[in-house]
Amino acid sequence: MGGKITVVGLGPGDPGMLSSAALELLGKSRCIRLRTGIHPVVEWLGQRGIHFDTFDYIYREAGDFQEVYRRIADEVIELGRKGDVTYAVPGHPMVAEESVELIINSARGEGLEVGFIPGMSFLDALYAVLEINPARGLHIIDGLRMGEQRPDPAVGTVVTQAYSRLVLSDIKISLMETYPDDHPVTIVTAAGVPGEESIERCLLYELDRTSRVNHLTSVYIPPLEGETSPAGCRFPLDPLVDVMARLRGEGGCPWDREQDHLSLRPYLLEEAYEVIDALDRQDMYNICEELGDLLLQIVFHALIAGEGGHFGINDVVGAITEKMVRRHPHVFGSVKVENSREVLENWAAIKKKEKGKGAPASIMDDLPRSLPSLIRAQKIQARAARVGFDWPSYEGALEKLYEELSEIKEAVKSGSGSQMEEELGDVLFSVLNLSRILNIDAEIALSRTISKFLDRFGYIEERAAKSGLELDQCSLEQMDNWWEEVKKQKKV
Image 1 (cartoon, helix red, strand yellow):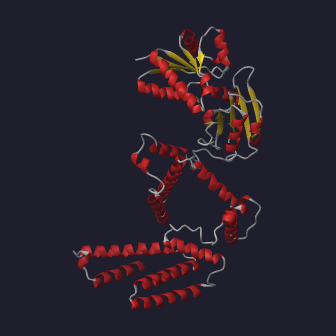
Image 2 (cartoon, one colour; image 1 turned 180 degrees about the vertical axis):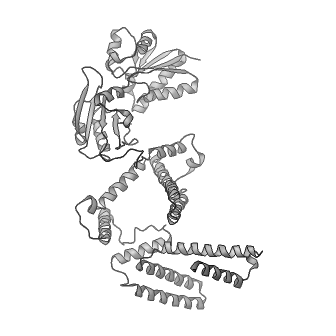
Image 3 (cartoon, helix red, strand yellow; image 1 turned 90 degrees about the vertical axis):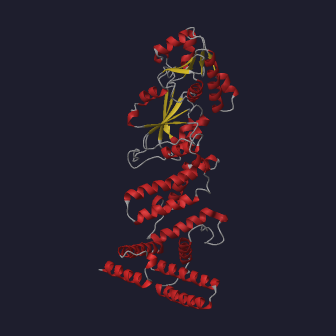
């Protein structure tokens, strides 16, 4: 059955903070392995005759930290198969210790017993040094995983693993996506270690200029003024992203794991229309629910893209945030505008400049062909009008509609299917153009008419049922009479 693996926390580095339980176990254990010998308390242990080996050689041999932690976990498990082993780590065993997580998972699969002797975490010392209360909100992220973990500007953030100026440079660049360049930060090294503790305050853009940095360095970023906590209007996407990652991961949902960008297209369109339906009905509860369903589709697509190494949800949010700031210079810059028309003109000019030399030959080229025809026609007409290709008033558009109606009559007389299809398309296009000039949303107008038709047709079904008839047993004249009845009722 093997022995017992006991994971011991060595505390932040002050021997006086090492627990008596940890010291007692280290003094009597025959097999002791330290994750690293680069820790202030290690020399003190050696001076007391405690014999141990370290895994520092793995750090020198491995290609990255993931390989380091995996190899350490494998060796600890192998030792545990043979007998009792004590594995000692800096700080607390469950704080920023990936090797411990791997050991727990492997030991569980093999039936090996794992015990713990907690130690004071470097975070505990950090709270005292910075005089902060973590109960008021604190976000902790790994400085080596800034692409996966994002700071929360609503609360204070601690970035761990900031062990070199190169890492600090990467951390700085990532943080600048969320905080102003001149946001204050605090660099803390060897918190709680007498004679080695260092505290340096600077501005974010100066973060990687410090010379006092080593494996015991962390960075504290205070919250942004004006930000609210997740309990208020701000709520990070992380929980939803984590759920979707679990569903897509090993042992997740078979259906979710099978999906790709193409297979999800129908659901994205369906959820968008369900949001519109909820908006039309002014149902606030349902609007919230449907917006969540639509957001799920966006996160789903971003997750799939991230699995392919392309982009993630943070890139999506970051890109659209930058775009909105860039395209609103009248709000975030010094540009002056008089009305919404000038806003749209500026928007078009900025968009054209963004695309540069690779801009499309036609102002219509970047309209998605997958748009529903109704929406696409409206966008095409609006773009043409923007450059002056438009009727000066609704009268011209109305006359054009009459002209197209006349042409459809002639097409019907000819009996040509292709000609009727073409002329009917012209009629629809003319109707949309008229609705645009009259400032009426054709989609909303048509949706209201559909609802009106369904309401009146429902009345016909009710009258037929009360008469003991199926609809197909009713004459057209009878159904038309009921139709006129409900029309009069609605007008009264």
